[in-house]
Length: 99
Image (cartoon, rainbow, N blue to C red; front, side):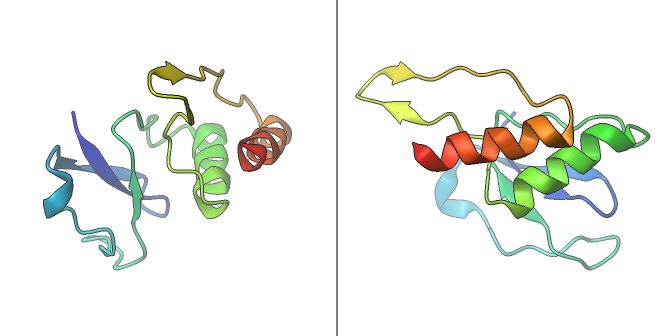
């Protein structure tokens, strides 16, 4: 558990621990040397073979979503269902940008 760096090219997720002060948010993938995306601990990587979910994850990451729940007030969280396809992902990103 903890924050992660994700490579959508290699379909890997590397745990970075829980100390935010030690995080390197500009990591490159150790396999392909491509960009890794820094994400919240709520992120759970799908199986490497799940093309559909990885395409959704890539779209969300490229749109700036980092898998955090937007916070309302001091202790209220918004819960949502993860998009099941790219059309839902696009609507999801539009809604997240309104918050």
